[in-house]
Amino acid sequence: VRIPKSKVIAIVLTFGAAGALPGAEHGFVDLPAGSFALGCVSGDDQCRQEEAPQRRVSVAAFRMARHEVTVAEFRRFVEASQYRTDAERGTNDPPGCFAENAPGISNHDWKVLPDRNWRNPGFPQGDDEPVVCVTWNDARAYVTWAAKASGRKLRLPTEAEWEYAARAGSTAVRPWGDSPDEACKHANVFDLTSRRAHDLREWDQAHHGCEDGYDRTAPVGQFAPNAFGLYDMIGNVWEWTSSCAARYPLQGPDAGREEDCSRHVHRGAAWFSSPKFARSSKRYADPNDSAAFSVGFRLAEDVP
Ligand SMILES: [Ca+2]
Ligand SMILES: [Ca+2]
Image (cartoon, rainbow, N blue to C red; front, side, top):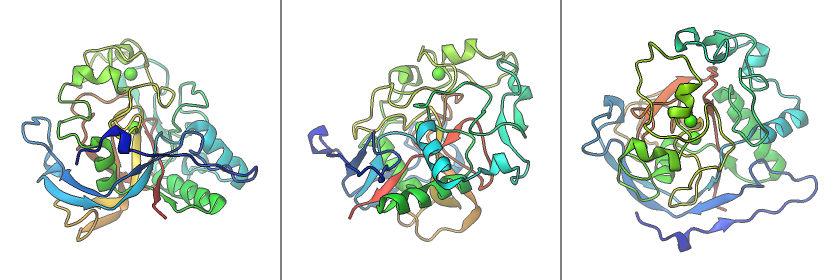
């Protein structure tokens, strides 16, 4: 589907004093119903078996948040609800969040650490950066709270919706085209900046051959949006979806799947992702209680 930018309508949401909706300051984009080819595009030599076969699927109209949920937005939820994340309570297995145990240390020392959580992911984060170290359970709790607080039909996107939104009509490997070295205008990925900040002598993943300026997470919305006006769909942080782990092919956006709902799919790769991960069709499933310094989420909303 090809949608002219002029047809992409930004929804400006307004709220009363008590009605602060997480994500509202950045807004949502109305996405039209459409069909698209989900999964590996032909000629993508990084494509993995779980991304195939490519299949045409239809998506109903919905809304997508322009940005990933930020630290400030997540803090408002925590302060209003007294919620404690899985990693803070240590109720996940293993307890804590996958992180660096010291800045710049080899990736061989990255592991789940009990004292890492969204308040302390192991590197400093500004309020406008995407929240990390949140599990799928935590994302669901946030969405449930935000929907009730705002009276809106907020939810996580399905993975089909996510890919439809990320592609925004593109049939290339990435929303901007096929080249990973073009990433740095469009996404915060594992680039030359990230490489300098990490001692990755035994790192088996390649970096992107460009400079995006951020060694770890970046404030949301720093890079060019895609054709739908959405920011950071690729890179910055992986984004939890509402879709249970399941093999392709999908019969519809989510129908007919043999599902493992103890794991959910996250999409889009992150600040420490190499080119083989930072692709529109890449999908990864993790346990519902898994937290990582590279995984967050964004909101979707039903059209009234
Ligand atoms: Ca980067
Ligand atoms: Ca992202």
